Amino acid sequence: MKRRSVRTKLLVLLVICVFLVSGMVVGCAKTEKEQAKKEESPKTWTLKYDYYSIQNTEPSIIDQWYFNEVAKRSNGRIKVEYYWSGALHKTGEHFAAVRDGLCELTFLNYGYYTAELPVSRGVEWKWRPGLERPDALFKSTNRLYEETPIWKKEYESNNIKVLYMTNWGNEACLFKTPVLSLDRLKGLKVRTYGVEGDVMKALGATPLPIAAPETYTSLERGIIDAVTSFGLRTAAGMKLHEIAPHVIDIGSGVQGPSAVVINKKLWDEFPQDIKDLFMQVRKELIDYKWAEIMNETMETGVKTITEQGGKFHKWPDNVINEAAKIAVPMQEKMWINDVIKLNLMTETEAKEFLAKLDKYTAEYNKDSKVLGVSETYEKLYGKK
Image 1 (spheres, rainbow, N blue to C red):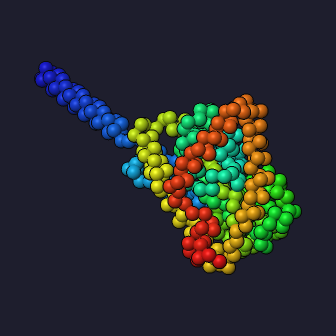
Image 2 (cartoon, rainbow, N blue to C red; image 1 turned 180 degrees about the vertical axis):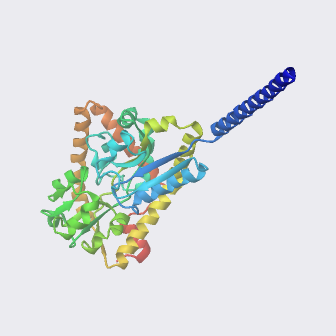
């Protein structure tokens, strides 16, 4: 009896051991399968796009197309969250924010970062001959950036990767009263920033560097008499024409060259297929989409302001030429002196940089598709 009992116990123990070992084997196999499945699942990224102005500005509409296309084509691997009107960081804070990884994507308007982006300012000009076409300047700046190591260093040494250079289209200026001569400009308090602040001062106005979100209230309170350094679609979206109803094409050319950027550490972590996706959509943007969107935004701005009682004017050619004679040599001298003092370029290198810019814009001007403020008004409503 005792022997049977012992055998029975041993048999039971053996069955239990077999059961436990089998369970462990199955459990391990299951864990390995789950781990393998987890490793096979593609990594995803949620990127914050941090923008200082309103959602429906010229560049923000372009940027939304770009990032939405990347997200759509990534099959869910890239997601983009949008933060408007300084919801994450205020005007002037975005350079440090993207550098330090506090946001993944942002838009850097050179005029707000004159100390951080001195080389970039070499493509921001008022009344410079040949730089009147936004899409020609857009293509030229992207090409020139890729060819200029010292310009790339300005961003990449600060942990910032440029996705593409951009701008706001042709400048629109809004005045409370028609100002059609330099004499009438003198003494006016004008909202501006960056290089145009220097220009407006040279032309006799009083420049005030007011951030875009504060422009409407500044007009309303009489702090300023006029607004420069604005895209027309942006001005219409912010309803600036309610207080400054006279839109004046001063012939100064393209407004606000800027950079659309991503945190470089994050960029370097992306697999090659994700990087390729960003670059493919960039190519489409440069080839045709940017010009298409920019024309749409200009038409929207002209229609909105016209239908709401705004009046369009254009400086006579003699006034434009008078402004150019004052502004162009002053700007060039200031920029060249700045990059020399900072040991970024020699005088020869700075002049070669500008010569390349002029050469490329002349080349792209031949096939320019984007219309200016006055051209768009005439297309929609005919000449006055």
